[in-house]
Length: 309
Length: 307
Image (cartoon, rainbow over all chains, first blue to last red; front, side):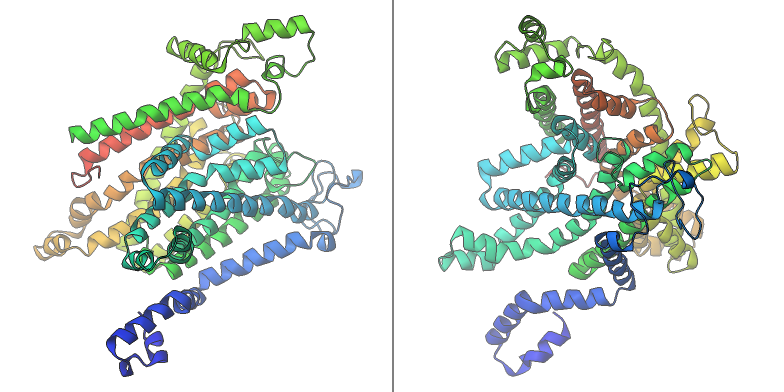
C-alpha cells in the first residue's frame, strides 16, 4: 500500500483492526484508481499516446469541417496529382483529395475498432464471469466453446464470419468483435477463479450476499483492470483487423473512404504515386502506435506486477 | 509425461470435430436459402431447384447431411468449387505449399531478428541500443502487415532495385514477403527476449559463472540465453496465428499464390465449398501444429507440466 493513503487517514493513530478496515475500504474505493492515474500521468509515452488518439478521434469527428474537399468528388484536373499546397497529401487516380479521404476514412476505421471492442468486451466479460463463478458444467461448456474459437486464427474466423454474414459496416464490426472474444473470456475466467476463493467473497456470502451482488460488487472490480488493458490494446488490434479485411476487399467497399481500402486502391500505384497508399497507412500506424503506448502505460499503471513484460 | 501427452491429444479431438461442424454449418448459417448459394444467386425453375437440392443433399435432414459431409472428409473429398468445378482439395493442396513456405520463412525472420534485437537490448540495458531496439519493436507491433509490405516494396523494389516486386521462385522473391510476415512477430519476440534475458542475467548462476571468470560471451550464450529462450518457445503457439495472418495478407500485397489468395477470392465469389475447405484445412493444420508445439514444451522445459 502506498505511503500517501496511510498518511491521509493517520493509520498510526487507529487501533489495528480499524486501520486495516479503513485501509481496505479506501484501497477498494478510490486509491487504487487514483494510484493508477498517478502512475499513468508519470508515463510520458502513455500521455503522448492519449493525446494522439484523442487528436485522431477529433479529426475524424470534425472531418466535414476540416476536409478541404468532398472525399468522393472526382476532379479530372487533379488525377494522380503529387502532394502540393492545394492537395497536401496529393490526389488519387480519380483526382480525389487524399487528405480529405484520410480524414473521412477515420470515420470508418476508428468506429470499427471501438464498436468491435465494445462487443468483444461485453460478451467476453459476461461469459468469463459466468464460467468462472458458476464453474462445473457451465464452465466446461463455455471453455470448450472458447477452445473451439481459439482453433481459428483471428483473421480466419473473421473472414469466415464475413463470408457467412456478407459485407457491411456492421457485419465487419461484428466479425472483428467476435474473433477476439475467447481471449477476454479466458482472462476474466482466470481472474474470477482466483477472486472467488478470496476471503472477502466468502465473507460476503456468509453475510447473505446474493450471487448477483457478489458477482457485480465484489468480483467484477477485480476483473476490470485486466479488461481495461485488454480492451485498450484490443482497439488497436481491431482497427488493424478491420482495415486488413477492407484491404482484402472483404470489409468496407470503395468509394466510401476507409484506411484499409484506400491502401488497397493505391497498391498498384505504389511505384509512382506512393502518396495514395502512404498517408492512409500512416494514419493507421499512428493511431495504432498511440493506442499501444496508452495501453502499455495503462498496464503498467493498473498492474505494476506486469511491468517490463 | 505420457499422461500429459495423452490428455492433450484427447483434448484436440473435440476441437477438430467442432471445426468440421462449424465449416459444415457455414452454408446453413448464411441468411437465405442454401439453394441460392449453390445456384450462385441465379433465379431457378422449380425443377432445377429440386435437382440442386438433391445434388447437394439439401433435401436430407441436417444430421444426415453432416454424416455425408464427414464421409466425404474421410475420403479426402471436400466437394467441387462452384466457380471452376475443380475438386476443392486440389485447389487447396496446390496453394498450401507457397503459404507454408512463406510462413516458415517469416518464422525464421521473426526468430533471427527478434532474438538478436532482444539480446542486444538486454546486454546493453538502458543504452541507446536498448532504446532504439525497443522503438523498432514498438513500430513492429504497430504497423499493419499490408502497410509494411507496401513500404518494403517501395523502398527495396521501386527505389533501389534490390528485390523483385512480385512473382515466386527464387529466394529473391521470398526476402521481402518473409520480412513482411516476420517483422511483427520479431517485435514481440524482441520484447519478450529482452525482459526474460534481463531476468536471467540477475540470477545466481549467472553471477556465479561470472565470478568463476567465465568470459562474457560464454555467459550470455551458454548460461543466460538458453534459459531466457524458454518463454519465447512457449510463445510460439500464439505467434503461429500471427504468422499465418501475416502470410494471408502478404500474399495479397506481393501477388503471391497461396491459401490466403484462395480464401479471399472464394469469399468474393461466394464459392462456399471452397470457403469451407479453406477454413477447414487452415484451422485443422493450425490446431495440429499448435498441438505439436504444446507437446514439445514438455521436452524443452521439464518444469512445465499440464496442471
